[in-house]
Picture 1 (spheres, rainbow, N blue to C red):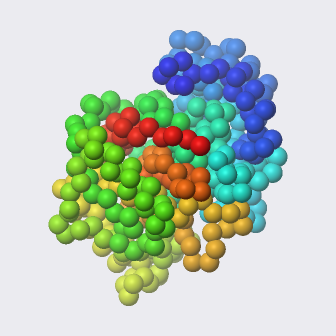
Picture 2: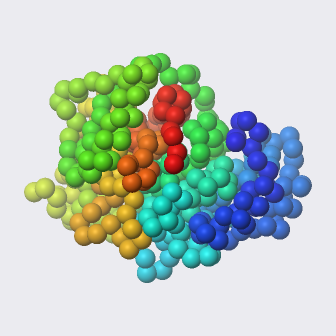
Picture 3: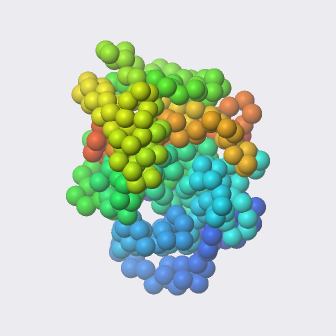
Amino acid sequence: MVGDGWWSVGEALERIGRLDPQLCAFVEVWHARASARARSVDRRLPLAGLPFAVKGPAGIRSYAARRLVAAGAVPVGSTAVPGPGTYWQTWGQGAHGRTVNPYRADRTPGGSSAGSAVAVAAGMVPLATGSDGAGSVRIPAAWCGVFGLKTTRGLLPSPDRTGLATAGVLTRRVPDARLYLRYVLDGYEEAPRARTPVRAAYSPDLGFARTDPAVDAVVRAAVGRLVAAGVVRLDAPDPPLSLLDPRETWLAVRGGEPPRAAGAGGGSGADVREENDRRLDVYFARTPLLLSPVTPNRPHGHEGPGPDVYSTALTWAFNVSGHPAASLPAGFTPDGCPVGLQLVAEHGADVPLLEIARVAEEALPIVRP
């Protein structure tokens, strides 16, 4: 594990060779190149020899991957994303076939950073890059029982001209994600240990989603443990935070249309975006942390979630608004499905958010089936 002596490139490649034929997390594995780089890396570099995976065939060209390599980390392969003709919200397509959830093979790992989440969850790599345009880091992190961070819009370079997708990372533990940000972000400054309890509010639905009671129960229990441990203090915001459903706004922006072309709830998409921004500004002016489930539903089957079910319902509001958001493992439903707790902070508070998540993780030991 990073910080405690990470496993070697050779160990990562051995685990990939043994586990990936069943899990299908990787599109390509770079055995020869990774082994050669591991032998020649400058051991004085801070991440010398750290094996990591990159999201999708183009992930090695991403800004984050280049910065990790410059710090001595060794890319071992590219991970699965949805294949041609598949819906982005369902499953990934690896070299060996359809990517499966490491806890329940009959369920999706989430997407689109599907393979990255599976590779981290199965211990094939300690860290994998991702990108998040609607929940593409947070959803697979939640459904594979790992930590995932979506950064503030504009914090790191992104090729997405719509501004929805930002860089992200998936790790087994929060300190590994903090290490990622330290060596990827220019001007990184360490945050002091979070002063607890942190003021927060919990919303099971953000005011519009239909959340599965089993998912809500797992997340409420996790929040209750954080309160009991003195990590957070739940406040009742005045007025209570209730957002407008950003679905039509998100779809319009992703489609390249002006937000005003999409109506939602009787107003234009631009009106919805402006009103949600206003409500979030009011909330974060008084309360530094917002808590919710990552998804309203548990991991669905590989053929899709069914009609009118949006796994992104609780995540894409923060792609539209640009706030940093993270997924922290919260526990499991009675049928063995991982559930994630979403933590959202004000713009630019990525490093403090990671510090809060680290303290929360210490108070939420997860018993894994």
